[in-house]
Amino acid sequence: MKKVLRIIPSIILYLLAITLLVYAIWVYNHCAEIVSQAIEMGQLDAVEGRYDIINFYMSSCGQYFIFAFLFAALGLVLQRKPVIVSDSAVSAPLAKEQVDDKILDGIDGDEETEDNAELNGEEEQEPGAMPVEEPDYKQYERPENEPDEAQKDKP
Image 1: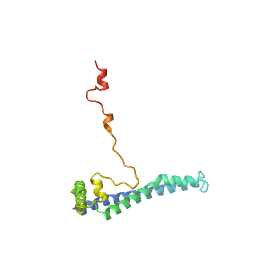
Image 2: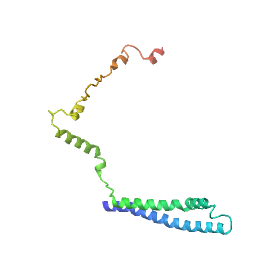
Image 3: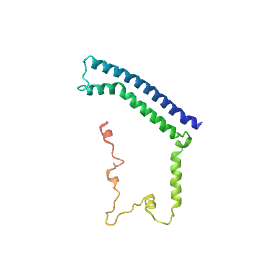
Image 4: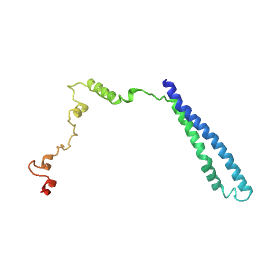
């Protein structure tokens, strides 16, 4: 079942690429006819109007060739790299916690390392660095018995 899920998107992309390629070739042939008729009638000079000719081809059929190539490349990538549809995406945070627990279990509790210091809330300071103090937020708190400014305005 998983193999079928992997093949279906690549088949769809291949079909889109083939369709766009066929359409691009058809448009290219019509562009060539239009340009050759314009040159024969003297409306367009091939040397002086080469920018216009290239611009006409690129705006008419160039984008279809590019998209056909991109869809074929995406189909190839999807065919080579399997798309895994499972419940692992739901349990990814749990897997990270399990990995973290395994790492913590491997550390000896008596040994003080940088990781243990960070887990304990202690930070290792460089020699000669000034100690960092926690700011005192109590000075910014409003006393409990003082009314709020919005309450002062109300009668």
